[in-house]
Length: 307
Ligand code: SF4
Ligand code: SF4
Image (cartoon, rainbow, N blue to C red; front, top):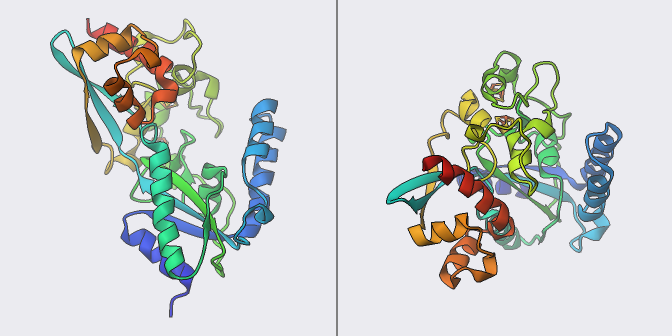
């Protein structure tokens, strides 16, 4: 007879997701992983302090007397949004997870919570370092581009964590692992327009990655060629070229998009609170309003190229 943990993992898999459950004692190792990154100089002081204070590492901090941590990967396609401009319908890509991030997280947790409650268990909603948890639980492996990959989902996924008082007898915890294909593949390294993926070490040169620059509000450095930008935010080059993504790379969610007048308001960078309410509401519905000013700047650059 299956244990409750095995039953939960079956429900997760039947839904087309992937998941692992690990004992709650590994919360301490997640905290140690953040400390180790800081010791290695991979996090600056403010990011380190922010992560240590914002993540929920202590089992005692969870009301349900936590026994295990659940980590789930759900499919997250790219989104194609259409902007009308000069009479043309221009498609613009948003990479996985930028859109509907919070909604997806809470929907997944609601489903897990209902399953757990049905069997008499409780769920809490922690803030945890998701990539570290996914890789060390055995759910995911790192690619050379430092993204998380999960079997059948590739890197087109969103990670969601929950804590629970569900007992967990098995322990799949392991040391961080990379995809075996990365030993012989160089596709991402070759396609990266900024040479951010090194051949001789695991860690990306984050400060060279296009995503780092087009997610920030600062001006772009001169060495970034405007033609390298191809997404409303972020960059898809290494994920699109990766053979691990061949089954998912053509999956898109489509969004009806924005009229010519709305596009004009966006590229003129009209403040968010001065947009027509229905335009603001559609941007909010996509959950991209926090990055509104950055998106307007990036859109002007992409649309500018179309002129
Ligand atoms: S996201 Fe783009 S810039 Fe960053 S490593 Fe991948 S290909 Fe290079
Ligand atoms: S493109 Fe190749 S090297 Fe890069 S992450 Fe994918 S499998 Fe690994």
